[in-house]
Length: 166
Image 1 (cartoon, rainbow, N blue to C red):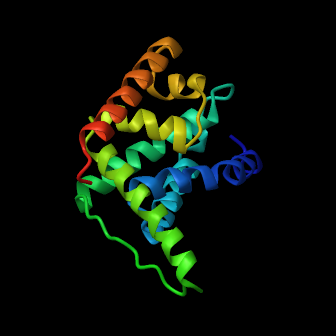
Image 2: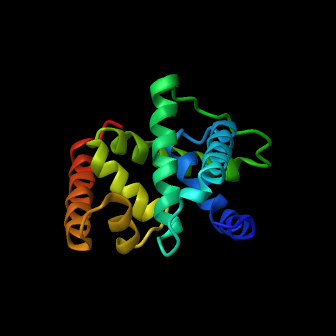
């Protein structure tokens, strides 16, 4: 892959890869930024191994996934909650708190799910990948992805119904 082509792909996918990490490192922005940089450095170093005609998105997400796995192996899972700062008024604070609580509840429920189901939900609904893109990334048919995602969402709904103490 030529350097200019790589730079175009970098501009197209850097925010998507950053978001991919942000949701998976509990919104720790410095970690998400570092991991994003690592992915594109690895991809740039390996750009000659990229097969022309292949989907760049599948390739870059595979690198991102492997980078995340390596990160967790090295660091272990650590959750840090960020503080809300400089909130202008009480109404905004209450609104932000409600949103934060719902988001935290969703992530607690997602953490209770099997890794493969959580991964599918995040790929589809956070990373906004199409079924075709997820299929290419995971090496499964689109039908299998649709079925697995449907089951994952059903499992998430069941967990939400069962757990009212979150």
